[in-house]
Length: 155
Image 1 (cartoon, rainbow, N blue to C red):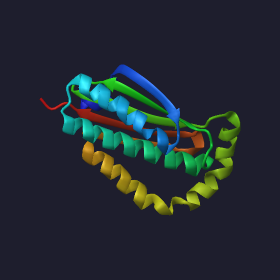
Image 2 (spheres, rainbow, N blue to C red):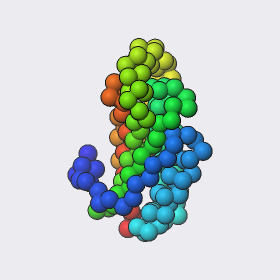
Image 3 (cartoon, rainbow, N blue to C red):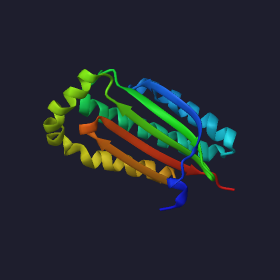
C-alpha cells in the first residue's frame, strides 16, 4: 500500500445526491470536471467516471439491501486532490433515526441475502481495474457504506 492512499487529500468538492441511479451522471460530471482541472487525459477522465459510476451503483445497491428501495438515503461524494491525483469517497447513511433502527431489524435478512456477493465482488474488481487504489467498507450495523478511490495523474 502506498503512503499516497493514507495521506488526507486536499478538499476540492462535496456532492450530495439521492441514492438513485438517475443521479449518478451528476457524480461523474463533477469527477470529470475536477479531473480535467487537475490535468488528467480524456482516457483517465473516462476511467475515473467509470469507477465513480460503479462505486455509486454499488453504494445504492448496498443502501437498498440495508434500508430497502426508495428509502430516501443520500450519497455523499467527497472529491480531494492528492499529491499525485484525485481521491473520491462515496458514502451513504441512513436518512433518519427511524431508518437507523430499521437497520438492526434487517441485519438478519441482509445476511441471508448475501447470495449476490460474487456480483458485488466483480463490481469492486471492475472499479479496481480503472483506478490505482480502491477500498470499500459496508457496515450495516453502523449504517455505513463507503467506497474510496484514488486515480493517479500520469505525467
